[in-house]
Amino acid sequence: MNICKTPAEISQLCDNWHKQNLTIGLVPTMGYLHDGHLSLMDIAKSKTDKVVVSIFVNPTQFGPNEDLDKYPRDFERDERLCRERGVDAVFYPTPADMYAPDFSTWVTETSLSQALCGLSRPIHFRGVCTVCLKLFNLARADVAVFGKKDAQQALIIKRMVRDLNVPIDIIMAPLIREPDGLARSSRNKYLSEDEHNRALSISRGIFAAEKAWKNGEKSAAKLTAILRKSIEDAGGQVDYVELVSQSAIRPIETVDQPALLACAAFFGKTRLIDNVFLE
Image (cartoon, rainbow, N blue to C red; front, side, top):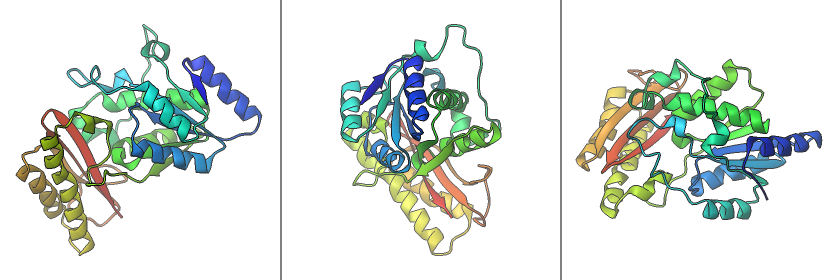
C-alpha cells in the first residue's frame, strides 16, 4: 500500500495508474475510520482497479467553536485498517499541503446547501465542496464513494459534479449503523455511556417514522413529529428535524416525491446526524 503525503505524490501515482488504463476509486474521509468507512472502501474496490482513501481533517469545513482541534485522529490505526481492507493508496496531507497561506478560491453550492446542516454550519459545505474538488483533481478518480449518513453532503457533491462537468461518478452508499442502531460516526467516540444510550432515540425515531410512512402516512408534519418527540423525550437538544425533497432539499408538506427525513441533535456537547431516504 502506498502512503502519499503530498499532492504531488498522489497525483503522480494516479497518473501512472491511468497510463496503465487502470480505473481509480476514491473514498474521501477525515480518518478515525469505522465500519461505515470500510463499507465505502469495499464498494470502491468492487467498482475500480485501484482504491485511494484520503485521510484529511479538513479545517475549512469547521466553523468557529466547532470540534476541529479535538476531532479524533489515529493514523496508525487508520493505516492498518486500510491495509487490511486492500486499499492501494492512502493520501495523508497536512493543511499546509492543501491550502496555500494566501488561498482564496472556493467552490460554493448555493441551493442544496441552504437548508438542514447548512443553516447551523454556514461555511461547512463550502469547505466540503472545495476540498472534494481538489481531491477529485489530484486523483483523477473515475468513481468516488460517499455514505448516505451524510446525505446532504452526498447530494451536494452530486450537484457540484453535475454543474461543473467533473468527469467522475458519485456513488451513494448505504448508511451503516452500530448493532444498537446508532448511525456510525467518528464523533460517537465523544459520547458518554449515558449519552450514547439516550442518543439511540434518534434511530428509534427514524425507524418509527419510516414504519409510519410505509404504513401509508404521508404528512411531513406527522412524520417529523414522531422523530422530534423521540429525541426530546430522551433529553436530546434538536438542531433540526426536517422532511425535504431529495431533488431540492426543500421542505415538503406531503411525501409525494422522493424525500429525505433528516435530523441533527445534541446529546451533551456532541452533535449527531441521521436520516432515512423515503423513496
